Amino acid sequence: MNTGIEFLSGIDAELNVPVTAIPEPKFDEGELFDAYSRAVVGASERVSPSVVKIEIEANDRKFRGRQMPNQTGSGSGFIFTPDGFVLTNSHVVHNASRTSVLMHNGLRSEAELIGDDPDTDLAVIRVDAQNIAPVALGSSANLKVGQLAIAIGNPYGFQSTVTAGVISALGRSLRGSSGRLVDDVIQTDAALNPGNSGGPLVDSRGLVIGVNTATIISAQGLCFAIAIDTAKFVASRLIRFGKVRRSYIGLAGQNVPLQRQIVRYYGMQNASGILVVSMDENSPARTSGLREGDIIVEFAGEKIEGIDDLHRLLTEERVGISQPITVIRGVERLELGIIPLEREFVN
Image 1 (cartoon, helix red, strand yellow):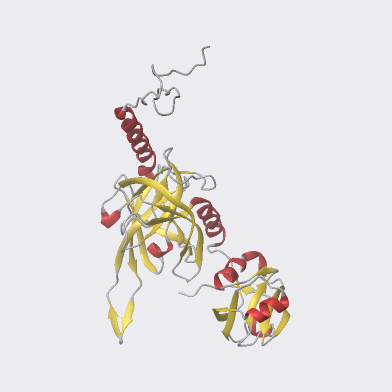
Image 2 (cartoon, helix red, strand yellow):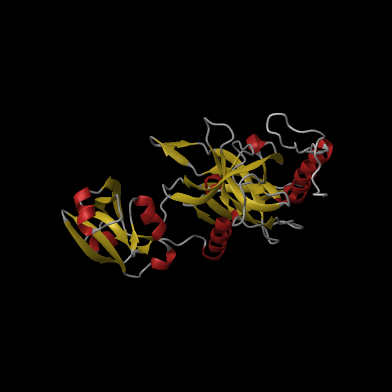
């Protein structure tokens, strides 16, 4: 009977079963290498004309009454609209007194800061230039670990540098300069160096999937990019409002474990909460009836085990709307109401 399986002639002496002949895979290494090269070259050719070098001068500073000279720096960005909006990192342009952009064709243009969001390390600037080629924005929702990732930027001032690697992990969290966690961060091993900040991370089709933002200095191959879906949301708010609105309640706290007896007595799912250390004058926290020494365990109906949980819930939608907040005061569990206000970022 023809089973469609090719056997070697003879029988395995020990097992007394026929041995299946497994054909060796036929790979043309040249074809594989060319396919990889074609993907990187194609993505680079599509995206590089939209990548810019951003040069800044920092605000004047005084030290012990003496005027200090302006500081200069540079980073990367990419044009993402036909009318000259450029996406970059907040830490590239934050507190800059002057910002200019050097484009792929060698033309230089002054840039205007449209909006800055240190919480996500994203910013939008705008240049006035003709015949601008914007990038195509992709989506970070369906990325896969192991897929090709290409970074384009200006490390150490070397313009239009291309590095390639893979997506190493998804869903990372990275703490921004404001102290808040940035969620849904992409980890990649595409090499990044100072000056790459704000440049695009793209896939094999040349679609932008992230905004390169950080490396771990003491490590190799640990680089991070803000997911493009996050960047789209933030950029739309910055263009419309100049900022991203978030709520705040005005307290300083620290993460503390909860006593096991209290957890069992109230049937709580928390292992920890936020100890209220201090509160701003006339803040929502103080006017709500919170006290120093209270431990926050719930906010807006959600479990709170630490400061990062609270930050995630202090969103634009909760500004001016009363929210339930649950605290442990001594051995009592108390339900209070609090009205978050709009948070203003202070430089």
